[in-house]
Structure formats: structure tokens, C-alpha cells
Length: 264
Length: 247
Ligand SMILES: Nc1ncnc2c1ncn2[C@@H]1O[C@H](COP(=O)(O)OP(=O)(O)OP(=O)(O)O)[C@@H](O)[C@H]1O
Ligand SMILES: [Mg+2]
Image (cartoon, rainbow over the protein chains, first blue to last red):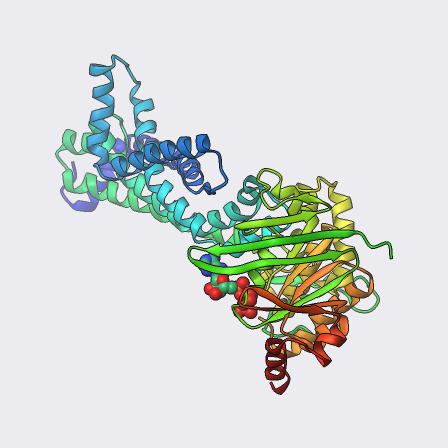
């Protein structure tokens, strides 16, 4: 084995490149799938938590809704308030000992990351929905939309846009935090690196490579999401559509404050 | 006259906690009426309009819509609101949609119209308020007067039987007030039934067929605009108008 730092790194890459790649792939699969399902859970919980209760509502609906809210609130608090590593051990080993369910390791991994992300996203989504100007809801109601239609076409698209940065944040946290799943035996990037380091006793070099890979993954994801946000915003300009094409060809105007008399 | 009564309110009251905002309100509106509601700030004008649109639930009293009490509608409130439009002081255009989208979404989702049909009618109403060139703009790219004209087009696109306006020009710079009032004058001329809360006294005098003056949750005086503005009977009306005329 080479004696200098860079030599060792090149040596590790040549010898164990594939383990890193496989580890990174597993990390990304768990992080992306977990974040995605977590977002779905978060949206479902956040939407249910913001269902308006009115005085006129039936007693039955009120009771059911309050019970559901209590259960969801407990879910959010418990999963936000305990470490994911402990949850992983508790769920993966606990399920087989207590309930005699043999979860596959992978199912457990997706389950744990999703349910965790869901708990965080639920709060984010709830906040995102509540932060939308009530005028938007009134505007929708005033043209006869029901609560479901209002949510679907007016509130959620705006809430989703507002919480995009949080979704990105969660993805990045998940890319890093999947390393706790090595405790239940998932061969993700951290586990793979540990193997490489132990086999050759090159902890510093092996983890240097791991750090670079982790950073590359998170950085790429954050840029990609930033790009996606920009796309969601649409262009800052709009085409002035002219009904009379002879009068002026439609050009690209950009907004510059008060320009309301311009079409005259 | 073959005017049909659209809305008849009787003994309507609204309290928020201990605060009595509307006290025993009675009034009615028939097709083609342009009713202007005037009165000091805090007199309950907005609350009255919001009760009419069921954005607030009246505490007591009834609101008859074609002789049917709708004050306590629950499930059908949305269907009722589709027929009674509302234009807000703060526009409330959907920020996630373009001008065209704002005027189409209600037609498609609520009235279940086909997309092409909704588009054609949205374009016609945008044309009417002079906003047709801006169909691709987002609300944040428009001036206040433009936003309010789009909001009016959005409400018209639902082809409401009755249109409520809550101080549609109060959030606008003076030079934009005119463009919105012109649109509303045009609608009045075409016979649209409207209830307008406004501080624009000259507009109310010119356009209204009926004027309602409110003070402290009570209708103090109502009548035709000539009478209210030139010969008010109630001393509160006199005081309010004289304060207004002096500026
Ligand atoms: N949601 C609410 N909760 C409690 N009080 C309210 C609520 N909405 C209105 N009020 C009270 O009701 C009274 C009447 O308000 P309203 O908005 O109807 O007046 P207004 O005549 O429209 O005034 P303005 O000309 O300023 O718009 C006010 O004293 C207000 O504080
Ligand atoms: Mg008001």
C-alpha cells in the first residue's frame, strides 16, 4: 500500500470504488424514497390537522376529528422527540421480538426514514397551510369552491411552493442520517466505508472519501431542488397578449412598477 | 315592475363574543337593483356583506334567497356562493394562477364547464374589464387597479345572480379608483344586481338605485340616492354626510 495520503486514497478508490458506489446508491435510494413517502405522510397529516371545525358541524364529526387530531399530534411529538437510531433499533428488533413480525431490513429502513420525515413534514405542512393568506381561502369560497377544492387548487399549490426549501432540507438531512441505519445492517455509505476502513486500517483516508461523497450528494441535491424551485416560480415576465395583432406584435414586457395605463 | 326579489333579510343579528355588530337588520334586494351601503368605519357593513355570502354565520335572523332561508346552510353553502359573487377590498386573486387561470378555475371546478368554453367566457369577461392583454400575467405582476378588475372578471365569469362588493376601491391609489368604478358603472348599466359597500359618495349618488346608511350595526336610513344625499332625515346620516362632503 502506498505511504502517502493521496496514494492511499487512489489505492482505496481502485480497490473499493465499487463498495463506495453501492453504498452511495443505497444511501440515495433510502433518502429519496424516505423523503418522498415522508412528504406524502406529512401532507396527509398536515391536511387533516387543518380541517376547519365549525359550530354547525355534527357532533359525530367533531368527536372523530378530535380523536384523529390527538393521535396525529402524539405521532408527531413522539417521532420528533426521540432519536432515529433508537427508533430503528426499537422498531426493527422490537417488531420481531414482541410481535413476531420479521420485517425485511429494507422495509424497516424505508419505514423508519419515512415515518420520521413524516413527523417533521407534518408540522412544516401545517405551518405552510396556515401561513397562506386567509384571503385566498375567502376568494375561493366566494366563487363556490368547497374546502377540498380550495385546498387542492389554491392552498396546497402555494403551500407546497413555500415549503420546498424545507423538503430540500429534509432530503439533505436524510442523506446524512441514513448512516444510523447501519445499526440494523443496511449497507449504505457509512457501513460500506467502515468496511473499507477496517479491512485496510485506513480510517482517515476511507472517511475522507466518504465525506467527499456525502458532500457531493447533498450539494448536488440542494442545487437541483433550488433549480426546481425556480422553475415552479415561472418567469418574471409575461407576454402581453394582444387581440389586435396589427396594432402591436406581442412582445416580452417585464414588470417595472406602475404601468397600468400602458395598454391604452 | 316585474322585479323579482332576490334576497330578503329579516331580523338579522350578528355577535362576535359579546360584541354586537349587527342588530336586527331588515332589507331586501330585487333583480337589477344597485344597492350602495354607506356608513362609518366599524358600523358593520363588511360583516353584513359577509353574512350575505355566508362567510360569516348570522347569529339570529333569516336570509331568504328566492324565498328560501339560507342563513344556516351547511353542505350547500358552496353551491349558494357560486351564485352570489363577492369582490373584496384586498382582491384575493389566487397567487398561484395566471389572470386567465383565476377566471377559469371556478368555471371548470365549480360549474363543471369544459375547458374551451371556460376559456372563451373568461376571455370575454377580461375583455370587458380591459384586462384581456394580461391573461398570462400573475397577480403579483399587476397594479392594484388591474388586480381588482381581474377580480371583477373572475366573479363575473361565474355568472352570478348577485354580486357583492366590499369597498372595492379602498385599497387603490386615487388614479386607479376611476378605472374600477368605470367597470362597475358599466355593470350597473347592464342591469347586474349588485350590493356595494363604498366610501365613494359621488359614485353611490350616480349609480345606486337604493342607498342604505348604517351606523353602529343598525340601518339608520335608506331610500333612493337623491333623497339620502340631498335631504337626509336622520341626524346621524346628516352628520356622516356632512363630514364626508367637507372631506
Ligand atoms: N371576526 C371578527 N371578530 C370579532 N369582531 C369582529 C370581527 N369582524 C368584525 N368585527 C367587529 O365588528 C365591527 C364591524 O366591523 P365591520 O368590518 O363590519 O365594519 P365596516 O363597517 O365594514 O368598517 P370599515 O368601513 O372600516 O370596513 C367592528 O367593531 C369589528 O371590530
Ligand atoms: Mg369593511
